[in-house]
Image (cartoon, rainbow over all chains, first blue to last red; front, side, top):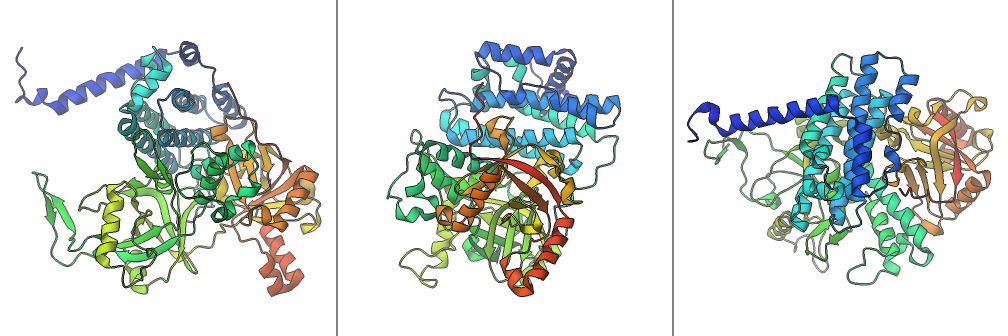
Length: 210
Length: 393
């Protein structure tokens, strides 16, 4: 078969777009079918790791939200989806930062630890409904930024991508982590969906706005 | 934010592992030897934590066309299809205001396996949203969303979107510079250990030439030691307090030692309500804090979530500047541990302290302090001398 590079539909951009859409569609389907709890437990079991306590009660805060805050079932469900996604990312990164093997230089760990802290901040903010849309978007952007920095540091110092470091830690279940960048994009979409039909809450007063 | 958390954790670990009394990080110059420091030594970790919390640093205002940033530089109006830049030589482009922060002391971390080096303060800024300035002739001022430069009476403060301070420096504010910054609404902030502000030993302001300063900056960029970003300029003086205040039992005629924490410290935790703090009504209605303990050490007051992963457990903390030699802090520490509780107050206004008492007398002090209290949130927090237990899985 001859690859017709001069045809618009076969151009790289179109191909990239097609692949991206196919992967995103697959992620959506997996999100719908995937039993997060069972999957995460399996990840840890296969990697021979105990599960970090932060992830012990996967939807504890979602439960808190359900009991403390009035909201529609859809809202609560959307928050729960975001929390579960955050927990999945946190578990993957926690596996890398807690590695006893020499897969993570100190500086890379510093960036990944910061990502975990921003994920935690996002989680607390969305469950408590005290996070502005703008700050939520900033947090996801900073998470993306730090993952990119960590990836560059790992490549420069270890000749290893962040994705490869994750895969080494979680063993055979490569598809659970998928591509981290994709996962963060999905997280952004889920976070934005929380703000799609509601007014942005009033900004917290302590930050001067002048 | 997270930077402080990291530092506190390092400090906690270092405190766990050894007695730092003879090597107090506050007096590092008395015991620090020449040469590299072992990365796993608790004294090293304590020193790193100490230096990383030093936000006061050299500060200089300038413009992007300053010769130290690149002689003959011109603004770029666009990029051609072939990737070459389109210069703007019209002379009508406003100068870009620049703030440079150069730490007095830098902490260079070197990977012994690869030889690569990083400045920890620079990396801390980058983890929080700044960008590494790449080597080359082009200055690009990518934005750092939510960050801001704030005016104070004697200089400038750089804060992240949650309000945490990453740098502050004393500098005279040139009215022309301020005018342009206000007009643009943003400034370019550069931060790193190689900005040519400090004068090398044996040199003077005049003998350390512009060319040498420019060379220093170029070298910093080559080594990846320069962080920068375009951030929002806040023209009005900053009124929100940035200062922690510790008060002894008896203040407000109540029995507990007090910690007054700037409210922005809780921004990254979605506000003080997350921990059960409530607006002050009376001393008969003060709630207990939820999911928070205060870890009291010889030099620090650190608030933690005791029930989560250690990497995520730090909330906020205070470091006694005088270290173990601070007798007033030592007395406060003793009362906080004896009472096993403290009164946590958080607000946005400046808590009156000694100078206020001198200025207005005790009655004026109590009135001002009462007014601050009435606009604050409060809770009683359990204190402990024990470091939060590491959560092993």
